[in-house]
Amino acid sequence: FEHGALEVFSATTNCLRGALPESLCSAASLVTFGVDGAGSASECSKNDHFQLNSRSDIPHGIMPCLLDLPALQTLHLSGNGITGTLPPLGANMTITDLVLAYKKLSGSIPTAYQTRGWDRLDLSNNGLTGTLDPSALMVPENSSLQLSGNLLSGHVPTRVKHTEHIGVLQ
Image (cartoon, rainbow, N blue to C red; front, side, top):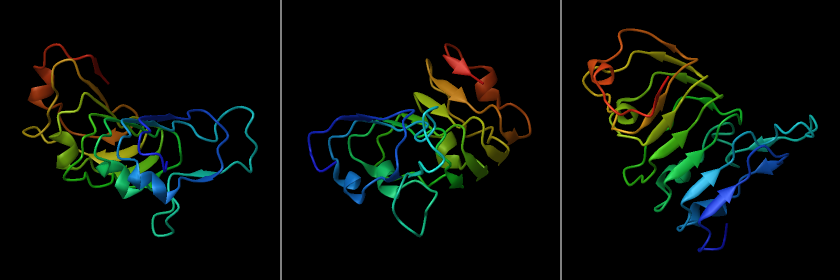
């Protein structure tokens, strides 16, 4: 990740070990980062353990710098054992395609996530609770919103009911 020209990093369904290096935070040209299911390939041993960051203060969370990489548009981190609550969104965040499915995330979906206007937001199969804000939820045309497999309650927001041309709504 020390190469400033790196634009895509994809290592899904591998037997990765260790943690992502802090130098990832300086990958200013990175547009796509996908590490879905690291350590989940059928050939992986029980000793293959992968962490999305090396910081001891958030051992099972997402490195905060990932959300602030200046060119990053796609971030897929499904099935990597991330625990805790959804991380705060960075003020300068450029991500439009965020997949944090099949994790152990808990708590409610912050308003910042609901008002973002994602091309794709997949928070399915976590332990998220609470309700969706009926006045805040943004679902742009041709977008994908996946929230199935959580513990959400309440009414489906009117904005979602009357959205046209949505790609996927789960």
